[in-house]
Image (cartoon, rainbow, N blue to C red; front, top):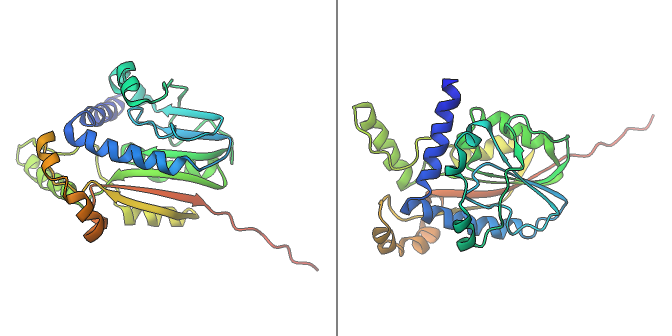
Length: 254
């Protein structure tokens, strides 16, 4: 239907944006964070939901790893999946679309996965609350979820809001992909807390201003170390690891 086509267009737009200079800059930062975070998470079953241009599980050593794409994302075809040449350059393992699955209805039993990674998955979900509840369902107790997203409280987010105002007046100069409302870190943390997740680690990154070309991004490289030190929560991207806590029961004796 028209809604599915709209979502597919949004997803294709996001993947094309990751091929731009700011997209590659952000993707490189995220890939490093995922590699660090998942390398020491152990178990048997792990799942990445969406965004095949990023290999969130390549440093993970679990024997069973899946990449799941939703119907709208799969409808984008080969244009959204990393090419063989790109995989060879980046050293990524070859991804096969193992699953066609809706993030709000995963084909896994309750408490069957040890790790789920969500690279921008919630931003593209029609119901991010339902997607998180589904993650809670399939994760084992003490299982981990790893999430990355665009930070609305950043220089990039500020430029996007300003561009949206001009868009209402007939302009079309969006800096970030048009994927709907971005979910702020504090808001996401509150959602996780309500679902009995405990945030273990959180990072912000990509402090360079909202410029479009690689040379200008390179010129502002000095802002990254300063941003991490002086305004850490205003990075263009955030990354967090949360663990599912299940409180035990104590039976009362007669």
